[in-house]
Image (cartoon, rainbow, N blue to C red; front, side, top):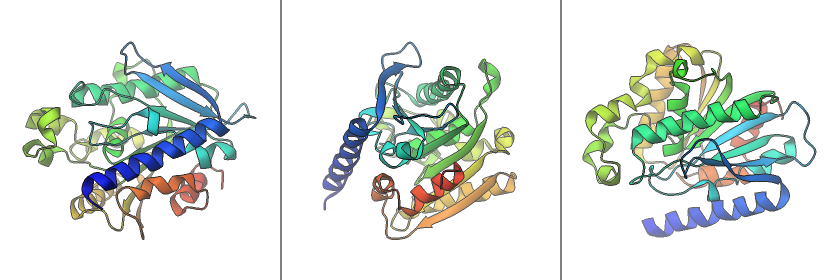
Length: 268
């Protein structure tokens, strides 16, 4: 398939998964977490929820410039039947939003979620591609500027980008309009000293066997950095997957990464 066909196929797959999730789960859609029109989230809940259920926040990818929460509820298909609440978060993609704003928004979404759902038994994060970058920025957040400090039990970073400085000189940066300074302060691999608060977080860095060499290199490099900081981190090289179906397969409860996530959340 051509590049466009591959992307279109991915969007079709995750949108279908999201539609299925909305048909089988209790949902709260377009819940605001801030004042901006893009600052909304969708909640997928079990029909019979225990007073103490784990909650997973999913941050979508799309090179910070496409996709939305409307295609991002697909993980609920396999997780909600196991008694896990799933939240899909929107943020202001480029060119409407810039990198500083997007990072701030996803951090604020976490604060809002734990304030609204204080009864959860554990908070977990998952992000794909650009979403994995944003999850890594959540792990490196300075929570002193917020009213609460989230206790994040686990994070799943899938086919992510952890150094966005190389993007500054590419066409990907045209809608983002990042300077090198902006890229540096929003690159998780350059914020390792701020990871000390994540020492109690279990982190999985997953990369597809057929991801590009740059995605694979960055994933391995970030894994080594987290490991050197004493973070409980594991590296997963997922066979027979590419940059897109590594996430699409999360609708399957038997998928290796679904099983790993369920184990992390004590639901295996």
